[in-house]
Length: 410
Picture 1 (cartoon, rainbow, N blue to C red):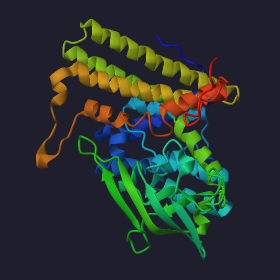
Picture 2: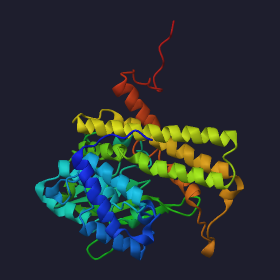
Picture 3: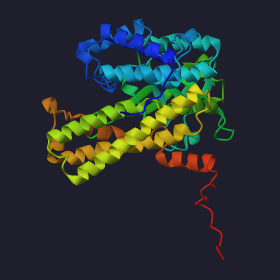
């Protein structure tokens, strides 16, 4: 029996309330369907109805303060919510990047007018965001970005190129970094702009998307080209040339994610994998068993780390370097486990589920393997996270500059 943390009477009362609500409102058509599947452009009529039900019940952007349209749920209550949706095996739909990245940054850095303008539109789904951060020459070294933002009257005019733009094909807004003062050090002179992707007439706002196709045909990322794309100056969050500080708030949410309950989805995936390998008669193979033991121990470590973070919330402590450590751990695990599942199934992994119209529709395991190739890159590469932990947590010296000669050891 796994060790559980007593989360207190308030969390238990919320769990009971939510469990009863799910019993009454559970969408039978969506049992077993993941939220990720709905978010990747597969939104069915049942999915749309479920989103409306969640929105009407106030289960969108639940961690936001009540004064901004959320429910003001604590990290503990959000953890309970994720667990109960997983237990019911129904999708825990959110507003994606708008809910987890943009909204919290607006709440911290936005003016009262900006909060009134943008936050309700995230909650009701009017604004769907993609991330315009990385550029061809500014990935992990994001502050080297070259996209220009020129002030023209009461607008900022943006020209440049982004790459690995997540969710662009389903979005109508982009939270975009641009350089509005090129004569300052690279971490300064950057502005954080909420950029409409379309004009009021529903035409492109100077934005061209070039989907980056993955081996199975999906395009979760795009190259994005902006040519004199316009946004009101009032869409600059945190003030002109203060975008780097706003970006750090966004990155903190991106890397931390749902660390307290991240293990829930990975645990379910693990046991689904065990079931499949048993059905294939593969679990007697000692190599398979060894890999499953490795995977189980890692999922349990995620669970205990989540409990630790929850205990810190209960004690009102700052979580410390957990965001960078957690990002490294889960992304590398997800990459290795999905690859193991594909290899363990052997020739079965080469089968496709549907080749209608020449589309290469792979199963969940191949899809997971393709998806997680990027997990150790976005939000700060695993290498960058190791540098952060080594230098800022362990106090290790910085890596030597490869452009400078090394001192003679003699």
